[in-house]
Image (cartoon, rainbow, N blue to C red; front, side):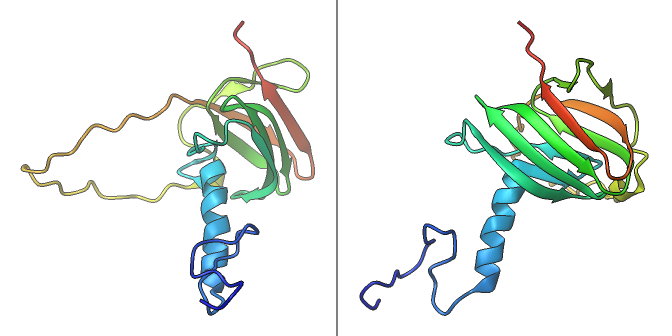
Length: 166
């Protein structure tokens, strides 16, 4: 590579360092990071689904989720400490978190039951996979989560905080 140019990888500003300029690499990196912090499919907004071990504490603002929700998250010790969600369209907000929460003001939101009634979270019908009898598939361990349903109104902001079990 020329002097001062990187031969690949990622620059400190998260742009990719693979000449020529690769916009798909730049957008792909940030989209991947956003998916580690929040996913909004499979019937709910899932917070911190793939938090890297090195990101024990942090915060992010302005993530957009299905259903017209704008999400900001602050976490400490791998647990959600504060969530601020703006509902742009109204409707049911279903959130999945790694720990229990309370609505800013004191009460725990209602636990989610059944299928999310918000049509933006319709889950696709997926056929069962065909798995060979000789396949050696290891069991996958999935962290426990808490899932809440919150009815929202368009334009309202909802704040949730960590519910300590101490």
